[in-house]
Amino acid sequence: MTNRRDFLRTSSLLVAGGLLSSQMLQASVLQAKGKKAIGLQLYSLREAMKTDVMGTLKSVADMGFTTLETANYADGKIYGMAPSEFKKMVKGLGMKMTSAHLGGPNYSKEKHAEAIDWWKKALEDHQKAGVKFLVKPSMPIPKTLDELKMWCDFYNAVGEVTSASKVQFGFHNHAREFEKIEGEIMYDYMLQNTDPKKVFFEMDVYWVMRGGYNAVDYMNRYPDRFPVLHIKDEKEIGESGQLDFKSIYETAYKNGLKDSFVEVERYNFEPIVSVQKSYDFLKAASYVK
Image 1: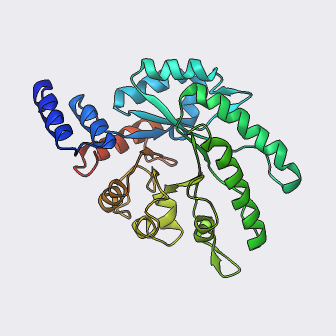
Image 2 (image 1 turned 180 degrees about the horizontal axis):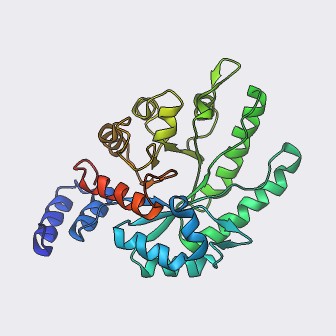
């Protein structure tokens, strides 16, 4: 077990050698506290969050999660609370809210200015909550490449708004983004037609697999586009045996992973138990920092 003196001595040596990146320092601090850098997408506990926000968040903190990604924003509030108050609650439990899923208004070229204004307000609110990432969790599937290009241009515009504040804007995939439109894989087209300086992609590794592709292949092909991951499985993390989480994490770390969030959408147990089992699987994995 790492004690405080050993931790400080090791960290000092690494700093002196110029080897301690910010990611390594964060991991070392968490390990010294007996925790790993594992986040949770709160959609995993969506029903519980409707009825008992504080109690649910306390349960999440007690499990050992360190970061949160929200999935509820309306009328300037996060889970019905002012952003600054939500941040205070989360911080008081020893966690940070670092990311948020935001649907936004229905988009069309005619409503571009209105949509951008909505994202400006959402950015302002979420800055008060201390987020680093704003993520659009889904989109209508276009019928043509011209329509898809319209969405890519819109995402670039939203990314232009957020990048001025150092908050990053990203897109979260499902399986349908791996369908072809006019002979082009939708996901590849989006990667190639969005500005890497303005738009990142929060890769959902499970949905990549369900779309017929391999998450590691995409991370190797586009190493600078996936700073955030959704770690997901059929139900609890690791239960299906269909995903190679070791290779996923090792490749993500190599590429500079900034954050990752467990998401459990379907369950073999009560949701809180399924989330706990998912955390336990990753905590026990030697390849997770």
